[in-house]
Amino acid sequence: EDKVVQSPLSLVVHEGDTVTLNCSYEVTNFRSLLWYKQEKKAPTFLFMLTSSGIEKKSGRLSSILDKKELFSILNITATQTGDSAVYLCAAYAGNNRKLIWGLGTSLAVNP
Amino acid sequence: DAGVIQSPRHEVTEMGQEVTLRCKPISGHDYLFWYRQTMMRGLELLIYFNNNVPIDDSGMPEDRFSAKMPNASFSTLKIQPSEPRDSAVYFCASSPRARGNQPQHFGDGTRLSIL
View 1 (cartoon, one colour):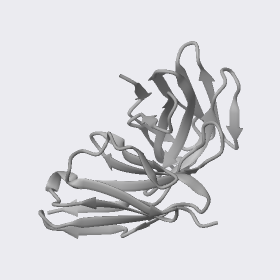
View 2: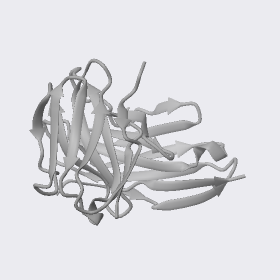
View 3: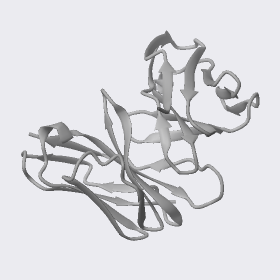
View 4: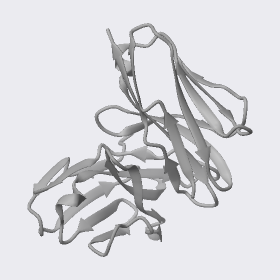
């Protein structure tokens, strides 16, 4: 059965800290991996990764995919209270448009 | 550009009542997805459409759930009769037709409480 597993489930840090969120996957015919940020409402898209070893970056956030070891990480440097959210990871598998979702990592950044 | 629009934002109703959730996808997007999110199970795909045609409804929990997409700019998810275990946040998402993988863009969701 296809699955995506995220760790840790929750994390509490202080402003200015750097955090690394993990996402491992076991999916049939893997195509790409996506990261989303969910605050109180809709999940909002952050990154989509298709190739191994190529870092995607947006401001203080960056992400990379390892297709050999079947995982991805999301890094957030110099965290701010506005980074507090649930971060979701999902994978496209097979020849369809279904995303396989992890349960998320809940990040709390304290001032 | 307007994003995915869902209504209502909140719905509280009694067990046994019919519930209808509505969604307007982003203009030009050919794929529409209905999800349910709970603390225990996370995001679960219920059904998705391509060009208004249901492609995969394997996530629809039972016959009490039905979804339609009568045109490219409107979809409904209906629960009849509703039960307390249907309480959750229901999201609609859409994505463009473009080749290859595309991110899905979510609406703000409908928080459903069945008493």
